Each structure stands twice: as C-alpha cells, then as structure tokens.
Length: 237
Image (cartoon, rainbow, N blue to C red; front, top):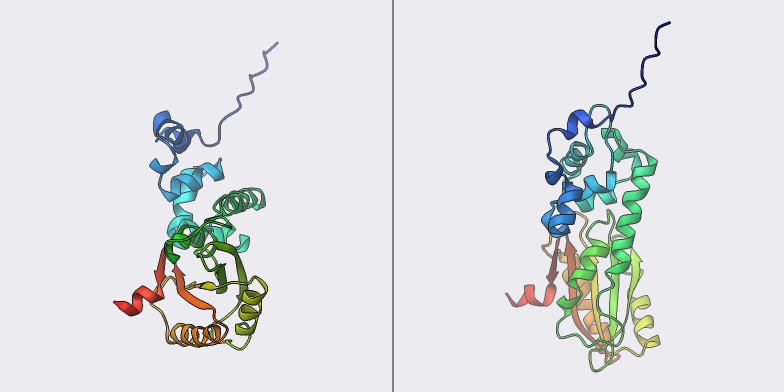
C-alpha cells in the first residue's frame, strides 16, 4: 500500500519574502529602530500585513503610494479605487481606515485651556486632520483674551467661493463661546499652498466683520499636502 503524500502548506508570500532578510522587513525594522525609521510604503505594508500569490505586501504598498502619490492620498482614496490595483479588499481597507482614524484621534493638538504662542502651533493637528481630505473643510480655533484655546471646530465643508454660507455661523459660534480671538483654517485638496484670491477676500471680510464685535482674527492657516501656510506671514513676506 502506498503511503499518502504529506500535505505541504505553503506560505503564499514566501517567494517574495526571500528578497528581504528578516531584519529588513518593515515590522522587524520598526521593532528594532522605531516607526520613524520607516518610509510611508513600509508603514502601509505593515497595515496591509499579507500579500497575494503574485505580490508581497511591500510591493502592494509601494504600488499604492506610487499610484496615489502619498500615504495621506491612499488613506483618502475610496475602496473602489484602492482595490483596482489588487491585493486590497474590504478587510484590509477597513484596517487602514481604522489606523488612520486612531492617528487623528490621538493627534488632538493643543488642549483647551492651553495658551498659544503662535497660530502655527496648530500645524501638526491640522496636517493630521485635513491634509488627506479630498474636499475643502473650513474651521476655526476659538481663543480667550489670553490666547488660551477654548475649542477647535469644523464650520463648513465645501468651496470657499460659497462665502455666504458660513461667516454668520463663525460669528455666532465666536459669540457663543465668548471668544476674544479666532484662528480660521481650511485645506487645499490640490496640495498647492499658495493662497488664492478667494482666500484673501475671505480673510479680509472676516477680519472686518469680527472686528466690529471686538473679536480679533489672529490668522488664517492653509493646509496643503504636508505643509501649513500662515496667511499673515505670507502677506508680510
């Protein structure tokens, strides 16, 4: 009688993993050298976890970064676009989105009650929350007379050309919170940080409107890609 052949369970990614020594794999390097030692594709590869019969998770991650241009753009892309490249299904997409949301919740920025030395102290928080969005978001940070943060809120989503929609909402909220100063902010989904004519007109109009109520518009911050531009500093340059 012939002996039954042993069942061999093959690692579908083994043929791709041999290209990287154990110490060079993103997860092992993170544990050894810290997350800051990894590039965006390697961070994404850790979230993807596994590959396909044709591609490793590192290759899938690199293709996604190449296709969309940045890690933030991959996170902002809908599932329908991400899965076009293959290797990413609903489960992996959900894990990536959950990790991104956890990052946003942790990056709270200055806490209520903290005094700000500069509007740009909000930069890290703004990059985490706005740089990856495919649509424009307009918001404000409300402060007291000592420049202590009261709270930060989203006011409006949409095009800044629709200026009739939210000035009164901003003013009403500033009065409700008894704010003495306001920092407004919005993102440029295009990734171009240069202030537009609409940005300048909006800033001037809100500055005049708020000053009539003895509220100072401290600055207007524009988030574009990984950068944050102070409109006040831009006009001084």
